[in-house]
Image 1: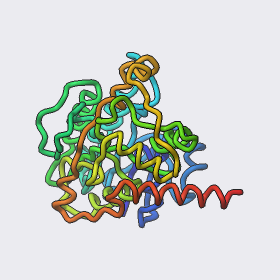
Image 2: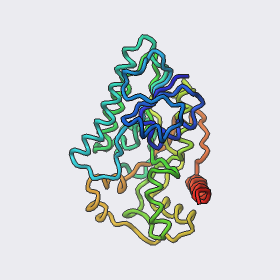
Image 3: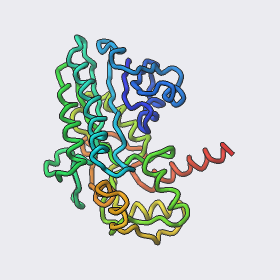
Image 4: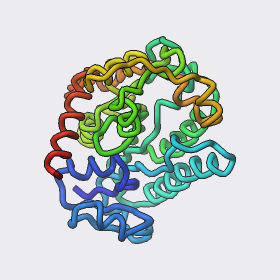
Length: 306
């Protein structure tokens, strides 16, 4: 199987490449030297789509995009977030559309931010009532571009991904220092929902979309048991055997992060309905089990490096 991946050096991309059972992987990257240091030696690295014959590809996996969290959303940053997703997706779609033997499957990233801020109501892929804000705007156009690759030759899967939990990057690693010091706690009133996914299940979802033709269209890539921010903070503190006394005021976040603080102050209660109906088996359906596995693995890695 011949697979092209964009965003291969990111958190999900690196884990996916480790899990793929094929040597025929091509990764599009802006920095070949950096990618060569991160990825296995057998990966073919390219810096332009012109280097790829799309007639020879079986699957295209599009994971590229500037991180949407961690920086204030200036107009320049907003443009970078949008264009880093829209532009490469449009390029891939055009290549797929003009191929005489198009790839069988195009898997493109998105996020549960498509739904915008929501309350406690459970949301499935059929949800139509969205909150029109920046995260929705980014994802709506991103998905629309991706779906233009759909044809009788190419099946399109769009993954609305939740908060990816991993022990080598991402949201969890940003939380751990404060929680390990006993300074962690919920954000604002803690009632906003967090729809999360263990990195191993995220990889398994992508593998399932490659191999199961019944999986198509929008797919919520989240664990089946989303929790409130309060419960998340309490569970992480319990797993770490640390107190959970502190609370981050909403005003503090708004002052520090500006509009991007909305990602932390509001959430979505997302259910992976399509995966469940297709009998996908989550290895880590419970937050406590997921955190214990990740933190135990993290501790083992630390001990092995000492």
